[in-house]
Image (cartoon, rainbow over all chains, first blue to last red; front, side, top):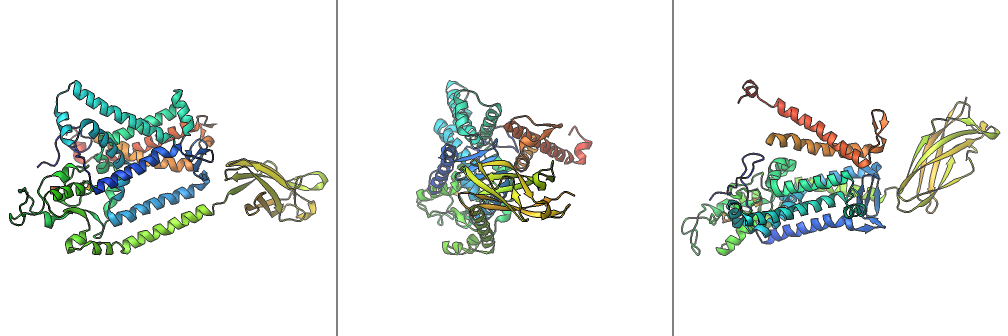
Length: 467
Length: 79
Ligand code: SF4
Ligand code: SF4
């Protein structure tokens, strides 16, 4: 049994034999498809969702504002982005330690798009054997038609994917308008084709090579594994010695194990490896071989699970389910999990207490201090007021910290539009005898929302006296 | 082909990271090009920035590849 049929495919990396993946059904395949649907409905659907009369999720690059449902994030919120990345990393550590490459097998875009592309391929060209035959057949009108249909469908899906991707960064409404009037901005069009092209290349052409040679995670995932990590395992003890036999024959009688050496587990493997050789870094943990082998076992009336999720320890010590689950909680997972939970709580707390108002004070550099009518001394400040909410809001500015200190023209009210920064100049004055000449004095500027006095910012600044 | 991917792919990943970090901190409208404010559209600035980063990173990957050649390969270039 040769593991993979040779396909004469261009080898991008090491000599690559084209993998003709056989389709598979079963419990894990259902899960995989559920996740394909869930992630893709989310990905393709999210830009169409509206919120507060705008696109619900929009990482608006031109405005430099990220709209995510009720929130508006500014570059100043980069802290949240950083924490989000840390959370993702820890989640990856955590789940890898528990059950191996769950991410790769079920949720990674590379897997998901490969799966979708393969589904199209299978619908148009037929399952594995038909595809191998088709590729070997001479060129003709029929082959051209079938291949053309496949590539056409792939290209259409890729372009749509690229369009969706760009609509996360550029408002979808404008993009649709540009699409129907054929007036795409050149960069938008470029990025649609760039992302679409990459989708096509990765899911249609390179496929398992991305996981094998290009993915950083695949390279270091091993360090997160330990003997209690659940991974896809072939039960060597039960399966060997492998070999063909007649149906209904008790394998022990003919001196064989349960593996009938049908090779189906290899045919369904998207990375084209033989799981019977043990855990390999190429295995993306998609569990397709479990489904496939279970079907074989069922046909042979053997118990299922010759290939199954198990751990190194469980195989060695013949543990059952209970012992395996008993070892899910161990120092490594507890530490990963604990850190993960702590960061998540901190993140949510940060979100919940995120100030709806921010103020930056800049001293006006042109005029440090000057004398105005009545001998009063005046300093000018520039306030950058950020209204982080999505409604226009009125703010009142007051000043304190020195005797008789006042704003020119009394207390000031400013209206700041929704989710906007506005720069406001204010003149602060004190009587000449309130501070020593040449001194610099701490003062406090307070910006308060008129409709909600709990929303306020008090900032310290300095008041300079002329000599 | 392998060499091409070895140069372009890691640099692509790092350029993506650099792009995010750089433009989170710096507003493309506040950049100066040879003393005059950048007048491209923000989208153009982001894009050019990305390819700039990619180019720089690719140059570094290329150097790595170049220095990886063994003495034997240098002494007997015809292979
Ligand atoms: S599918 Fe199962 S029985 Fe068939 S070769 Fe693989 S391990 Fe053996
Ligand atoms: S060995 Fe099994 S689980 Fe691993 S990638 Fe292949 S089919 Fe998927």
